Amino acid sequence: MDNITLNPKTVWSEAKKVLADELPARTFSTWFEPILPIAINDSELVLEVPSQFFFEWIENRYRDTIEMAVQEQLKKDITVKYTIATSGSVESPAEQNAQNTNNSRKKYRKTVINENYTFSNYIEGANNQFAKAAALSVAESPGEKSFNPLIVYGGVGLGKTHLLHAIGNSLLANNNNYNIICASSEKFTLDFISGIQKSKTIEFSKFYRRADILLIDDIQFFQGKEQTQEQFFHTFNELYQTGKQIVLTADRYPGDMKGLDDRLLSRFNSGLAVDIQPPDFETRVAILLEKAEQNGLSLPYAMIEFMATHIKNNIRELESTIIRVLAYSSLTNMEIDEELIKKVVKERLGQRFVSEITIEDIVRRVSEVISISEKHIVGKSRKMEYVEARQMAAYLCRKILGASLSSIGMYFGGRDHTTILHACNNITNKLKTDKRIKQIVNSIDSELSATTL
Ligand code: ADP
Ligand code: MG
Image 1: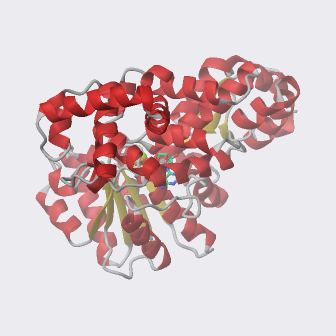
Image 2: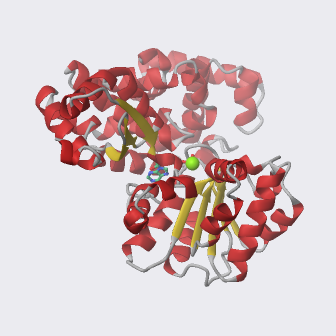
Protein backbone atom coordinates (compact mmCIF):
# COMPACT_ATOMS: atom_id res chain seq x y z
CA MET A 1 0.00 0.00 0.00
CA ASP A 2 2.96 2.28 0.57
CA ASN A 3 3.42 3.38 -2.99
CA ILE A 4 -0.12 4.70 -3.23
CA THR A 5 -0.26 6.18 0.23
CA LEU A 6 -0.29 9.74 -0.92
CA ASN A 7 -2.82 9.45 -3.67
CA PRO A 8 -6.27 10.37 -2.35
CA LYS A 9 -8.03 8.83 -5.34
CA THR A 10 -6.49 5.41 -4.90
CA VAL A 11 -6.99 5.40 -1.16
CA TRP A 12 -10.62 6.35 -1.55
CA SER A 13 -11.33 3.89 -4.32
CA GLU A 14 -9.91 1.07 -2.19
CA ALA A 15 -11.89 2.22 0.84
CA LYS A 16 -15.01 2.35 -1.31
CA LYS A 17 -14.61 -1.31 -2.19
CA VAL A 18 -14.72 -2.16 1.49
CA LEU A 19 -17.74 0.09 2.02
CA ALA A 20 -19.57 -1.35 -0.96
CA ASP A 21 -19.19 -4.80 0.55
CA GLU A 22 -20.47 -3.73 3.92
CA LEU A 23 -23.42 -1.54 3.04
CA PRO A 24 -26.72 -2.08 1.24
CA ALA A 25 -26.41 -1.19 -2.44
CA ARG A 26 -28.81 1.72 -2.33
CA THR A 27 -27.15 3.25 0.70
CA PHE A 28 -23.84 2.93 -1.00
CA SER A 29 -24.94 4.54 -4.23
CA THR A 30 -26.87 7.33 -2.51
CA TRP A 31 -24.23 8.34 -0.02
CA PHE A 32 -20.87 7.10 -1.17
CA GLU A 33 -20.76 7.35 -4.95
CA PRO A 34 -21.08 11.17 -4.90
CA ILE A 35 -18.11 11.64 -2.57
CA LEU A 36 -14.92 12.87 -4.16
CA PRO A 37 -11.42 12.43 -2.72
CA ILE A 38 -9.62 15.76 -2.62
CA ALA A 39 -6.37 15.50 -0.74
CA ILE A 40 -4.38 13.35 1.61
CA ASN A 41 -1.38 13.66 3.87
CA ASP A 42 0.07 11.58 6.71
CA SER A 43 -2.76 12.23 9.08
CA GLU A 44 -5.76 13.39 7.09
CA LEU A 45 -7.87 12.49 4.12
CA VAL A 46 -10.10 15.24 2.76
CA LEU A 47 -13.31 14.24 1.02
CA GLU A 48 -15.71 16.49 -0.79
CA VAL A 49 -19.48 16.04 -0.34
CA PRO A 50 -22.17 17.72 -2.42
CA SER A 51 -24.06 19.68 0.24
CA GLN A 52 -24.39 20.67 3.85
CA PHE A 53 -27.24 18.26 4.30
CA PHE A 54 -25.17 15.46 2.81
CA PHE A 55 -22.33 16.33 5.15
CA GLU A 56 -24.55 16.20 8.22
CA TRP A 57 -25.98 12.89 7.15
CA ILE A 58 -22.56 11.34 6.62
CA GLU A 59 -21.18 12.92 9.76
CA ASN A 60 -23.94 11.51 11.93
CA ARG A 61 -24.20 8.08 10.47
CA TYR A 62 -21.14 6.99 8.60
CA ARG A 63 -18.23 8.91 10.00
CA ASP A 64 -16.75 5.93 11.85
CA THR A 65 -17.52 3.47 9.10
CA ILE A 66 -15.66 5.62 6.60
CA GLU A 67 -12.75 6.28 8.88
CA MET A 68 -12.36 2.61 9.63
CA ALA A 69 -12.44 1.68 5.97
CA VAL A 70 -9.73 4.21 5.21
CA GLN A 71 -7.61 3.17 8.16
CA GLU A 72 -7.86 -0.40 7.08
CA GLN A 73 -6.35 0.55 3.73
CA LEU A 74 -3.52 2.57 5.16
CA LYS A 75 -2.93 0.53 8.28
CA LYS A 76 -2.61 3.64 10.38
CA ASP A 77 -4.63 6.29 12.17
CA ILE A 78 -6.03 8.83 9.85
CA THR A 79 -8.72 11.45 10.26
CA VAL A 80 -11.27 12.00 7.56
CA LYS A 81 -12.28 15.59 6.94
CA TYR A 82 -15.02 16.91 4.72
CA THR A 83 -15.48 19.91 2.50
CA ILE A 84 -18.74 20.92 0.92
CA ALA A 85 -18.70 21.35 -2.82
CA THR A 86 -21.50 23.86 -3.22
CA SER A 87 -19.70 26.64 -1.46
CA GLY A 88 -17.46 26.90 -4.50
CA SER A 89 -14.24 26.68 -2.60
CA VAL A 90 -11.17 27.81 -4.37
CA GLU A 91 -7.62 26.77 -4.02
CA SER A 92 -5.88 29.76 -2.66
CA PRO A 93 -2.33 30.67 -3.58
CA ALA A 94 -1.03 29.00 -0.43
CA GLU A 95 -2.80 25.76 -1.24
CA GLN A 96 -1.59 25.93 -4.79
CA ASN A 97 1.99 26.28 -3.73
CA ALA A 98 1.66 23.23 -1.60
CA GLN A 99 0.78 21.22 -4.65
CA ASN A 100 2.76 19.97 -7.50
CA THR A 101 2.31 23.05 -9.63
CA ASN A 102 2.56 21.29 -12.97
CA ASN A 103 -0.73 19.54 -12.84
CA SER A 104 -2.36 21.66 -10.19
CA ARG A 105 -4.32 23.76 -12.61
CA LYS A 106 -6.11 20.87 -14.20
CA LYS A 107 -6.96 19.41 -10.88
CA TYR A 108 -7.97 22.77 -9.57
CA ARG A 109 -10.43 23.31 -12.38
CA LYS A 110 -11.92 19.97 -11.68
CA THR A 111 -12.54 20.37 -8.01
CA VAL A 112 -13.50 23.99 -7.69
CA ILE A 113 -16.46 24.05 -9.97
CA ASN A 114 -19.22 21.72 -8.97
CA GLU A 115 -19.75 19.41 -11.93
CA ASN A 116 -23.33 18.78 -10.97
CA TYR A 117 -24.38 22.35 -11.58
CA THR A 118 -24.96 22.63 -15.29
CA PHE A 119 -27.31 24.53 -17.58
CA SER A 120 -28.86 21.32 -18.78
CA ASN A 121 -30.12 20.36 -15.34
CA TYR A 122 -31.16 23.88 -14.45
CA ILE A 123 -34.92 23.93 -14.77
CA GLU A 124 -36.22 27.05 -16.34
CA GLY A 125 -39.33 28.81 -15.11
CA ALA A 126 -40.79 32.30 -15.21
CA ASN A 127 -38.89 32.94 -11.98
CA ASN A 128 -35.41 32.45 -13.40
CA GLN A 129 -35.75 32.69 -17.18
CA PHE A 130 -34.02 35.99 -17.56
CA ALA A 131 -31.18 35.08 -15.20
CA LYS A 132 -30.59 31.83 -17.05
CA ALA A 133 -30.61 33.55 -20.45
CA ALA A 134 -28.08 36.12 -19.24
CA ALA A 135 -25.85 33.42 -17.76
CA LEU A 136 -25.98 31.41 -20.98
CA SER A 137 -25.07 34.43 -23.00
CA VAL A 138 -22.10 35.13 -20.76
CA ALA A 139 -20.97 31.51 -21.05
CA GLU A 140 -21.16 31.73 -24.83
CA SER A 141 -19.23 34.93 -25.22
CA PRO A 142 -17.56 35.94 -21.97
CA GLY A 143 -16.56 39.56 -21.71
CA GLU A 144 -17.98 40.42 -25.08
CA LYS A 145 -21.44 41.68 -24.28
CA SER A 146 -22.49 44.48 -22.03
CA PHE A 147 -23.36 41.96 -19.32
CA ASN A 148 -20.22 42.79 -17.44
CA PRO A 149 -20.37 42.32 -14.59
CA LEU A 150 -23.36 40.01 -14.58
CA ILE A 151 -24.91 40.02 -11.12
CA VAL A 152 -27.44 37.36 -10.24
CA TYR A 153 -29.34 38.11 -7.08
CA GLY A 154 -32.17 36.52 -5.11
CA GLY A 155 -33.12 34.68 -1.91
CA VAL A 156 -31.53 31.60 -0.37
CA GLY A 157 -31.68 28.30 -2.20
CA LEU A 158 -33.06 29.70 -5.44
CA GLY A 159 -30.24 28.62 -7.71
CA LYS A 160 -27.70 31.44 -7.80
CA THR A 161 -24.70 29.25 -7.05
CA HIS A 162 -25.99 26.67 -9.50
CA LEU A 163 -26.07 29.26 -12.30
CA LEU A 164 -22.63 30.58 -11.41
CA HIS A 165 -21.11 27.12 -11.60
CA ALA A 166 -23.09 26.31 -14.76
CA ILE A 167 -21.26 29.17 -16.45
CA GLY A 168 -17.96 27.66 -15.31
CA ASN A 169 -18.90 24.17 -16.44
CA SER A 170 -20.10 25.33 -19.80
CA LEU A 171 -16.82 27.16 -20.42
CA LEU A 172 -14.83 24.12 -19.34
CA ALA A 173 -16.87 21.83 -21.56
CA ASN A 174 -16.08 23.96 -24.57
CA ASN A 175 -12.49 23.12 -23.98
CA ASN A 176 -11.11 26.56 -24.36
CA ASN A 177 -8.17 27.62 -22.34
CA TYR A 178 -9.80 30.15 -20.11
CA ASN A 179 -8.51 30.52 -16.62
CA ILE A 180 -11.68 30.34 -14.61
CA ILE A 181 -11.50 31.43 -11.02
CA CYS A 182 -14.49 30.65 -8.91
CA ALA A 183 -14.75 31.50 -5.22
CA SER A 184 -17.18 32.54 -2.56
CA SER A 185 -16.67 36.06 -1.30
CA GLU A 186 -15.80 34.53 2.06
CA LYS A 187 -13.02 32.60 0.45
CA PHE A 188 -11.82 35.72 -1.32
CA THR A 189 -11.78 37.50 2.02
CA LEU A 190 -9.94 34.68 3.76
CA ASP A 191 -7.37 34.49 1.01
CA PHE A 192 -6.81 38.19 1.28
CA ILE A 193 -6.42 38.07 5.05
CA SER A 194 -4.08 35.11 4.93
CA GLY A 195 -2.14 36.97 2.24
CA ILE A 196 -1.65 39.86 4.65
CA GLN A 197 -0.66 37.55 7.47
CA LYS A 198 1.93 35.80 5.40
CA SER A 199 3.07 38.97 3.66
CA LYS A 200 1.93 37.50 0.40
CA THR A 201 -0.58 40.08 -0.76
CA ILE A 202 1.12 40.28 -4.11
CA GLU A 203 0.60 36.61 -4.71
CA PHE A 204 -2.98 36.99 -3.65
CA SER A 205 -3.68 39.74 -6.15
CA LYS A 206 -1.79 37.99 -8.90
CA PHE A 207 -3.83 34.88 -8.38
CA TYR A 208 -7.17 36.60 -8.77
CA ARG A 209 -6.03 38.96 -11.48
CA ARG A 210 -4.94 36.12 -13.69
CA ALA A 211 -8.55 35.18 -14.22
CA ASP A 212 -10.11 35.28 -17.65
CA ILE A 213 -13.41 34.71 -15.96
CA LEU A 214 -13.95 35.57 -12.33
CA LEU A 215 -16.94 34.01 -10.61
CA ILE A 216 -17.60 35.28 -7.09
CA ASP A 217 -20.46 33.91 -5.05
CA ASP A 218 -22.41 35.77 -2.36
CA ILE A 219 -20.87 39.21 -2.49
CA GLN A 220 -23.14 40.38 0.33
CA PHE A 221 -20.34 39.14 2.59
CA PHE A 222 -18.23 42.03 1.38
CA GLN A 223 -20.50 44.43 3.21
CA GLY A 224 -18.60 46.36 5.82
CA LYS A 225 -15.23 44.80 4.95
CA GLU A 226 -13.48 47.86 3.66
CA GLN A 227 -10.05 46.48 2.98
CA THR A 228 -11.35 43.43 1.22
CA GLN A 229 -13.59 45.62 -0.89
CA GLU A 230 -10.62 47.77 -1.76
CA GLN A 231 -8.79 44.67 -2.99
CA PHE A 232 -11.81 43.48 -4.83
CA PHE A 233 -12.23 46.89 -6.44
CA HIS A 234 -8.72 46.77 -7.85
CA THR A 235 -9.09 43.21 -9.05
CA PHE A 236 -12.41 44.12 -10.59
CA ASN A 237 -11.03 47.16 -12.40
CA GLU A 238 -8.07 45.38 -13.80
CA LEU A 239 -10.13 42.51 -15.14
CA TYR A 240 -12.89 44.75 -16.38
CA GLN A 241 -10.53 47.03 -18.25
CA THR A 242 -8.94 44.12 -20.05
CA GLY A 243 -12.31 42.79 -21.13
CA LYS A 244 -12.40 39.84 -18.75
CA GLN A 245 -15.80 38.57 -17.66
CA ILE A 246 -16.95 38.96 -14.08
CA VAL A 247 -20.01 37.23 -12.67
CA LEU A 248 -21.24 37.85 -9.15
CA THR A 249 -24.10 36.60 -7.04
CA ALA A 250 -25.77 38.26 -4.08
CA ASP A 251 -28.70 37.65 -1.80
CA ARG A 252 -30.25 41.03 -2.62
CA TYR A 253 -30.11 43.81 -5.15
CA PRO A 254 -26.61 45.29 -4.89
CA GLY A 255 -28.06 48.80 -4.58
CA ASP A 256 -29.79 47.66 -1.40
CA MET A 257 -26.61 46.54 0.30
CA LYS A 258 -25.33 48.58 3.15
CA GLY A 259 -21.65 49.11 3.75
CA LEU A 260 -20.65 48.67 0.14
CA ASP A 261 -18.21 51.13 -1.35
CA ASP A 262 -19.85 53.60 -3.75
CA ARG A 263 -17.14 53.00 -6.29
CA LEU A 264 -17.95 49.32 -6.31
CA LEU A 265 -21.65 50.02 -6.61
CA SER A 266 -21.16 52.25 -9.58
CA ARG A 267 -19.01 49.55 -11.19
CA PHE A 268 -21.80 47.08 -10.65
CA ASN A 269 -24.23 49.47 -12.28
CA SER A 270 -22.32 49.35 -15.49
CA GLY A 271 -23.29 45.74 -16.01
CA LEU A 272 -26.49 43.79 -15.71
CA ALA A 273 -28.27 42.76 -12.51
CA VAL A 274 -30.89 40.02 -12.87
CA ASP A 275 -32.99 38.53 -10.14
CA ILE A 276 -34.23 35.02 -9.42
CA GLN A 277 -37.62 34.78 -7.77
CA PRO A 278 -39.08 31.84 -5.85
CA PRO A 279 -40.36 29.24 -8.33
CA ASP A 280 -44.06 28.99 -9.13
CA PHE A 281 -45.97 25.76 -8.68
CA GLU A 282 -45.31 24.36 -12.17
CA THR A 283 -41.62 25.07 -11.92
CA ARG A 284 -41.49 23.38 -8.53
CA VAL A 285 -43.10 20.29 -10.01
CA ALA A 286 -40.62 20.31 -12.89
CA ILE A 287 -37.69 20.66 -10.49
CA LEU A 288 -38.92 17.82 -8.33
CA LEU A 289 -39.37 15.56 -11.34
CA GLU A 290 -35.83 16.35 -12.42
CA LYS A 291 -34.33 15.79 -8.97
CA ALA A 292 -36.24 12.55 -8.51
CA GLU A 293 -34.96 11.30 -11.83
CA GLN A 294 -31.40 12.34 -11.05
CA ASN A 295 -31.63 10.29 -7.88
CA GLY A 296 -33.14 7.29 -9.60
CA LEU A 297 -36.40 7.71 -7.74
CA SER A 298 -39.71 7.29 -9.48
CA LEU A 299 -42.59 8.86 -7.63
CA PRO A 300 -46.28 8.99 -8.42
CA TYR A 301 -47.20 12.38 -9.83
CA ALA A 302 -49.62 13.06 -7.00
CA MET A 303 -46.76 12.82 -4.54
CA ILE A 304 -44.67 15.26 -6.53
CA GLU A 305 -47.59 17.67 -6.48
CA PHE A 306 -47.98 17.20 -2.78
CA MET A 307 -44.36 18.17 -2.17
CA ALA A 308 -44.58 21.10 -4.57
CA THR A 309 -47.70 22.36 -2.83
CA HIS A 310 -46.08 22.44 0.55
CA ILE A 311 -42.47 23.33 -0.07
CA LYS A 312 -42.26 26.63 -1.83
CA ASN A 313 -39.62 29.13 -1.21
CA ASN A 314 -36.43 27.26 -1.44
CA ILE A 315 -35.26 24.85 -4.10
CA ARG A 316 -32.62 23.45 -1.85
CA GLU A 317 -35.45 22.26 0.37
CA LEU A 318 -37.23 20.60 -2.50
CA GLU A 319 -34.05 18.78 -3.30
CA SER A 320 -33.28 17.71 0.21
CA THR A 321 -36.82 16.41 0.59
CA ILE A 322 -36.13 13.97 -2.22
CA ILE A 323 -32.78 13.01 -0.71
CA ARG A 324 -34.38 12.51 2.67
CA VAL A 325 -37.06 10.28 1.21
CA LEU A 326 -34.31 8.17 -0.32
CA ALA A 327 -32.34 8.21 2.89
CA TYR A 328 -35.27 7.05 4.96
CA SER A 329 -36.16 4.27 2.66
CA SER A 330 -32.59 3.07 2.42
CA LEU A 331 -32.13 3.15 6.16
CA THR A 332 -35.37 1.61 7.24
CA ASN A 333 -36.22 -0.40 4.15
CA MET A 334 -39.53 1.42 4.15
CA GLU A 335 -41.44 1.46 0.88
CA ILE A 336 -41.51 4.87 -0.74
CA ASP A 337 -45.18 5.61 -0.50
CA GLU A 338 -47.55 8.40 0.38
CA GLU A 339 -47.12 7.89 4.08
CA LEU A 340 -43.35 8.18 3.97
CA ILE A 341 -43.46 11.26 1.80
CA LYS A 342 -45.95 13.01 4.04
CA LYS A 343 -43.83 12.17 7.03
CA VAL A 344 -40.73 13.66 5.42
CA VAL A 345 -42.53 16.79 4.21
CA LYS A 346 -43.99 17.35 7.63
CA GLU A 347 -40.62 16.89 9.25
CA ARG A 348 -38.98 19.30 6.83
CA LEU A 349 -41.49 22.00 7.48
CA GLY A 350 -42.10 21.50 11.18
CA GLN A 351 -43.80 24.53 12.64
CA ARG A 352 -43.92 26.29 9.34
CA PHE A 353 -46.17 23.70 7.86
CA VAL A 354 -49.51 25.38 8.33
CA SER A 355 -48.26 28.84 7.66
CA GLU A 356 -46.81 27.75 4.34
CA ILE A 357 -50.29 27.51 2.85
CA THR A 358 -51.92 30.79 1.99
CA ILE A 359 -55.37 31.94 0.91
CA GLU A 360 -53.90 32.40 -2.53
CA ASP A 361 -52.89 28.73 -2.70
CA ILE A 362 -56.34 27.59 -1.77
CA VAL A 363 -57.97 29.78 -4.38
CA ARG A 364 -55.49 28.53 -6.95
CA ARG A 365 -56.16 24.92 -6.12
CA VAL A 366 -59.93 25.40 -6.33
CA SER A 367 -59.44 27.17 -9.62
CA GLU A 368 -57.37 24.28 -10.96
CA VAL A 369 -59.69 21.57 -9.78
CA ILE A 370 -62.92 23.05 -11.14
CA SER A 371 -61.44 25.01 -14.04
CA ILE A 372 -62.74 28.42 -13.14
CA SER A 373 -60.21 31.21 -13.25
CA GLU A 374 -58.93 32.69 -10.00
CA LYS A 375 -60.06 36.07 -11.25
CA HIS A 376 -63.67 34.89 -11.34
CA ILE A 377 -63.41 33.19 -7.98
CA VAL A 378 -62.43 36.37 -6.21
CA GLY A 379 -64.38 38.62 -8.58
CA LYS A 380 -67.77 40.29 -8.45
CA SER A 381 -69.81 38.19 -10.86
CA ARG A 382 -72.97 36.54 -9.44
CA LYS A 383 -72.95 33.79 -12.04
CA MET A 384 -73.96 30.65 -10.17
CA GLU A 385 -70.89 28.55 -10.88
CA TYR A 386 -68.59 31.39 -9.82
CA VAL A 387 -70.52 31.94 -6.61
CA GLU A 388 -70.28 28.26 -5.83
CA ALA A 389 -66.52 28.20 -6.46
CA ARG A 390 -66.09 31.33 -4.35
CA GLN A 391 -68.00 29.80 -1.48
CA MET A 392 -66.03 26.58 -1.58
CA ALA A 393 -62.75 28.50 -1.57
CA ALA A 394 -63.89 30.68 1.32
CA TYR A 395 -64.98 27.62 3.25
CA LEU A 396 -61.62 25.93 2.69
CA CYS A 397 -59.71 29.03 3.79
CA ARG A 398 -61.67 29.03 7.00
CA LYS A 399 -61.26 25.30 7.54
CA ILE A 400 -57.61 24.83 6.58
CA LEU A 401 -56.11 28.12 7.68
CA GLY A 402 -58.55 29.15 10.36
CA ALA A 403 -58.36 32.56 8.68
CA SER A 404 -60.64 35.27 10.03
CA LEU A 405 -63.83 36.03 8.14
CA SER A 406 -62.72 39.54 7.45
CA SER A 407 -59.30 38.58 6.12
CA ILE A 408 -60.91 36.08 3.78
CA GLY A 409 -63.43 38.76 2.78
CA MET A 410 -60.63 41.13 2.03
CA TYR A 411 -58.98 38.67 -0.33
CA PHE A 412 -62.25 37.84 -2.03
CA GLY A 413 -62.74 41.24 -3.59
CA GLY A 414 -63.28 43.22 -0.40
CA ARG A 415 -66.36 41.37 0.77
CA ASP A 416 -67.82 41.89 4.15
CA HIS A 417 -67.42 39.26 6.91
CA THR A 418 -71.13 38.38 6.93
CA THR A 419 -70.92 37.41 3.26
CA ILE A 420 -68.06 35.01 4.07
CA LEU A 421 -69.94 33.60 7.03
CA HIS A 422 -72.92 33.00 4.79
CA ALA A 423 -70.65 31.29 2.24
CA CYS A 424 -69.16 28.99 4.87
CA ASN A 425 -72.56 28.03 6.26
CA ASN A 426 -73.89 27.41 2.82
CA ILE A 427 -71.07 24.98 2.00
CA THR A 428 -71.37 23.26 5.38
CA ASN A 429 -74.98 22.52 4.50
CA LYS A 430 -74.26 21.46 0.95
CA LEU A 431 -71.61 19.01 2.11
CA LYS A 432 -74.45 16.98 3.58
CA THR A 433 -76.48 16.80 0.41
CA ASP A 434 -74.38 17.62 -2.63
CA LYS A 435 -72.02 14.79 -3.55
CA ARG A 436 -70.09 16.76 -6.13
CA ILE A 437 -69.32 19.61 -3.77
CA LYS A 438 -68.43 17.19 -1.05
CA GLN A 439 -65.99 15.38 -3.29
CA ILE A 440 -64.28 18.58 -4.46
CA VAL A 441 -64.05 20.15 -1.02
CA ASN A 442 -62.83 17.03 0.70
CA SER A 443 -60.18 16.28 -1.85
CA ILE A 444 -58.72 19.79 -1.71
CA ASP A 445 -59.00 19.77 2.03
CA SER A 446 -57.10 16.55 2.44
CA GLU A 447 -54.51 17.55 -0.11
CA LEU A 448 -53.71 20.85 1.53
CA SER A 449 -54.64 20.35 5.10
CA ALA A 450 -52.06 19.83 7.80
CA THR A 451 -54.37 17.51 9.69
CA THR A 452 -54.00 14.84 7.05
CA LEU A 453 -50.32 14.53 7.72
P1 ADP B 1 -28.46 29.73 -3.86
O1 ADP B 1 -27.04 29.85 -4.26
O2 ADP B 1 -29.36 30.68 -4.58
O3 ADP B 1 -28.69 29.74 -2.38
P2 ADP B 1 -28.19 27.09 -5.00
O4 ADP B 1 -27.69 27.45 -6.35
O5 ADP B 1 -27.20 26.57 -4.03
O6 ADP B 1 -28.99 28.31 -4.36
O7 ADP B 1 -29.39 26.06 -5.21
C1 ADP B 1 -29.86 25.21 -4.18
C2 ADP B 1 -30.12 23.84 -4.74
O8 ADP B 1 -31.25 23.90 -5.59
C3 ADP B 1 -28.97 23.33 -5.57
O9 ADP B 1 -28.78 21.97 -5.32
C4 ADP B 1 -29.40 23.54 -7.00
O10 ADP B 1 -28.91 22.53 -7.85
C5 ADP B 1 -30.91 23.44 -6.91
N1 ADP B 1 -31.56 24.33 -7.86
C6 ADP B 1 -31.79 25.64 -7.73
N2 ADP B 1 -32.43 26.13 -8.80
C7 ADP B 1 -32.62 25.10 -9.64
C8 ADP B 1 -33.24 24.95 -10.92
N3 ADP B 1 -33.81 25.99 -11.54
N4 ADP B 1 -33.25 23.73 -11.49
C9 ADP B 1 -32.70 22.69 -10.86
N5 ADP B 1 -32.11 22.75 -9.65
C10 ADP B 1 -32.06 23.93 -9.04
MG1 MG C 1 -25.40 30.07 -3.07
